[in-house]
Amino acid sequence: MGLLGVYFRRTVGILRTEVLVLPSRVAVLVFIVALMALPIFTQDYYFLRVLILTSIFAIFAASWDLLSGFTGQMNFGHALFFGVAAYVTALLNLKLGLPPYFSIPLGAVGGVLTGLIVGIPCLRLKGSYLALTTLAFPIILTGIVFAIPSITGGELGLAGLSRLTGSRVMDYYLTSGLMLILGFTMWKITDSKTGIILHAIREDELAVRTAGVNTTRYKLLAFCMSGFFAGVAGGLYAHFMRLAGPSGLEVGLSFQVIIWAVFGGMVTIYGPIAGVFILYPLMEILRIVLDQFPSLPEIRMFIFAALVLLTLLFMPEGLIPWVRDKIETECPRCKVRNVFSRQRCRICDAALD
Amino acid sequence: MAQPFLEISGLHKDFGGLTATNEVSFNMSRDEIVGLIGPNGAGKTTLVRLISGILRPDRGKIRFKGKNITGKKTWDIVNMGIACTFQNMRPFRRLPIIANVMVSCLSPRAMKRGEWVKKVEAKAMDALEFAGISDMALEKASTLSQGDLKRLEVARAVATEPELLLLDEPFGGLSPAETDLMAKSIARLHKGGRFGRLHSEGPAMIIIEHKLAQLMKIVDRIIVLDFGTIIADGTPEQIVANPEVIEAYLGEGGV
Image 1 (cartoon, rainbow over the protein chains, first blue to last red):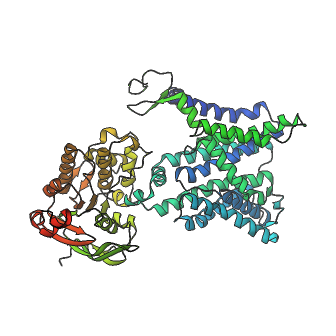
Image 2 (tube, chains in turn yellow, cyan):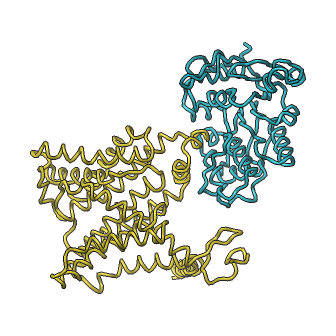
Image 3 (cartoon, each protein chain N blue to C red):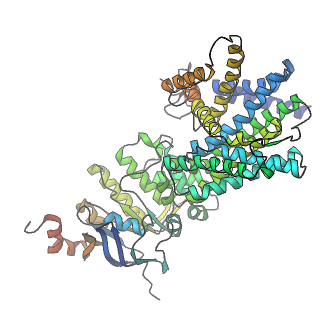
């Protein structure tokens, strides 16, 4: 019992000194607890379905941020990783009968290989040229998918995959748990030494080369890591929807992920996740609300677009960094973040303005 | 066998119709500081960029410690021990200064060397301390002044622990007091020794500079370029007395 008490006190200590001092960390804690406790209060089939898809797309949006936000390799065809992994997962599940816990990781490996295949020709490209080239890849693959319907199922896609787990609640815990774990992993990657190099490549690639770092290797690494995380999302999606179709390769999905990430705040990892958790359920709520007024024309997309535009007009850095700057101030001396209400830094006691 | 430390032979580079360096050849030894001077557009920066592998020469060879490094990747050349700084500073503006230097400390060469305790942050801090900007380690690079940016460039190059350091206008945009400090730092670096966890072997240097008075004090030898061609090569005293150099700088009949 004594040992348990020590661990308990240490946990409480960390909570008090590290987590509860900053509103952003409290917000993350509340978010995680709420996400985990939600099925206790409601097990509504439709509600959980929306949240499962939100979690899947949150992984997807964060993986885009890892490649395009952090490394600066603007990818306008991110749906490629998603779609390829979905197809690989579906084929493995349908043709070889692999269960989801094998087919999804193997699908993610498919995403990694796709990252390599896309990354190598894109190494020499930058900026808008890179964006246009990456945009082309999913369109090419859509053509291939339609050309060989015997394997890919053509326009209809591959249907009838086995279920993710037995029940909807388990599906929910699997996807949201994976979202938290993978999100944390991505955030840790960007916070590591590799992350510093990825940051630096976005800022000035030539200067990274003259620092003696093999930029080709790190750029390919970014493509592969991003492909892996997007691939997990694609595999989960295929198993959850029990369908892998050409819709997973659509240009619309590639742009959707950019909208989510830019809305939430690029170069943060948590920004895109928050972006998806705000925008995706919002679309569903709008659908339900607007269904009450059948006389109205289809204005759902209009409201969505107006909201995103207005947000970016007033918060060019994205929603989450803007909120974070409002509720926290950085100490000018030791660069530690503090609650906005504090007069003096909590670490070095310097006066905050 | 007496192999030259750096051997450049017949290095030629054209940009379209413009000849940037025209069959440049020279050798330098391990313990030299070479000043590279010449009027604007003489091809000094191009020459340095050819050596550091940022540009590829059209013809000619560069041999470093007996190995041919012509056309190798920039990072391979840096990892063999040639570091360079940029004339127009290129910091990673959105990163803290310490992270700027940590990128250099994470190169394979820097990771291999030094003490058994290879704390990257500690090494980066030492490089900053050497350059004299360690007190601003956590500031964003975008907040630095011109002089501090120059120091950051030097810190980044030094952090790879080079044997040959190519400095492109280290005094550019600095005040006289800052220039003196920088000149002292360079002389100290050339002498070699330990700067905390950094081991400086006293790198050989090629310094491009326009402030000749300060340059003369620290260099052993000066090479003068004009229109991509070496027009003079000798000790500072010889260069000052050379009529061709005076003509290139001041024009015909200038003196």
